[in-house]
Each structure stands twice: as C-alpha cells, then as structure tokens.
Image 1 (tube, rainbow, N blue to C red):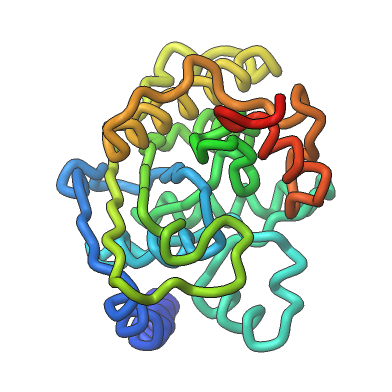
Image 2: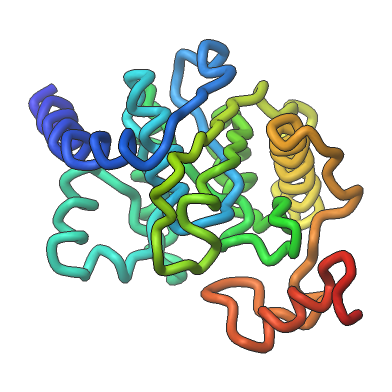
Length: 259
C-alpha cells in the first residue's frame, strides 16, 4: 500500500508538470474510456509521433488508471529520466532471456494490481506513408496469452499535427485537437489455450493490428488498408529511427510518389 501511494505521488508530480503543457498545446476528445475493463489490461496504441506516449498516458491518467509502458532498458540509464521511469514503476524491456523474463514478471504484477500496461504493437513509429498502423510485432500478443489479460486497441489521431513523425519542432498555433479512442477488447479466447507457437502469436498479433487499424479508421473517417504496411517488404528497417533511405522509400510509395 505504501509503495502504491508512492507511485501515485510520482504520477501526480509528473502529471502536474505535463498536463498544463498538454492543455496549452492541444484540445482533447476522449472516446470509449467508459468501456475499459475494470481489472488490469493491455492497451495497444498506434504510434505516429514521438509525443503520443504522453498523449495516451494523459488520457489514461485522467481516467484514474496509472499507465505503465514497456520501455527500452537503455532509457533507465539516462539521468533524471531513468529515475522518473523507476519511480513511476515503468517496465524495462531487455532483449536478453533473463531480462525478458523479469519484464514479464513486472508486467504481470502491474496487471494483477488492476493497472494498465501500454505496449506499442508496431514496435516503432509507423513506416506507413499514410501513417496507418504497420505490421505488428508479437510482444503484446505474447504477454496477453501468457497472462490472460484482455487487449484493448487504443487509437489516437491529431498528435502528429503538433509534432510530425520524427519532427523536432512543435506546431503550437493554431491549437490542435487530439482524439483518443478506446475500442472493445480483441477476441483472443480461441488462442489462449493453444501452445504458444509462432503461428498462434502471429494470429493474435494480426487481430490486434486489425482491431487497432479499424479504430484509427473511425477517427480518420477512412477505410484502413486491407493489409498493414510491411517495412521489410519495402526494403526498410523495421525498428529504430527511419534513415534517409527508409524515408526516400516512404515518399516513393505515397500516392502520386515516384514509384
């Protein structure tokens, strides 16, 4: 109980710093949050700009849910940032087998406490030229199948107008409106009792991305692509920042582009 009070205090301090800035930068419309599971769950947002973790986290915190992200282990070594991540009980992710097991144990503790684990199923900012969710990675599916936690697709749209993908300058005026929409949990029931093979993980991941794309489509008033963008098939790196070659391919594949 003392640990939980401490975490809420840390979240309160961080929110006290971030929320006034967010309120200046953008108006907000939050949709579907009254349908969130009462117990712990996994939230899977789309990833279009480097500030959308703050946008999504703000929405959940405003509902009284403490958002915990699966966060690259290296960020915990950054001065001040690492201290804030540890104090707010964020979940470090390591590629090593032992580290990955520890991450799962921490994530399960968060879920058992009724809080929210936020995982970007794409694994990186989308490479899709039109900023739709791209092909997913299996981390969210694996955690869902191992813990039995529901998976909620959480779409947002508008934050990229404040800070474009890989942009360095905030667009402050005119004030932008950001929409965050929580959908219904993804149906994974038929996969939960099956051996966790690559096929099962891929099926679960495809369902998560399809549900997320549908929610993004509702916000955009558009039909999502039938097949998610696959960066590997387009000769792009799948994670990390887009290099110049990736960006050139991205531009070429836009409607009306060179290719």
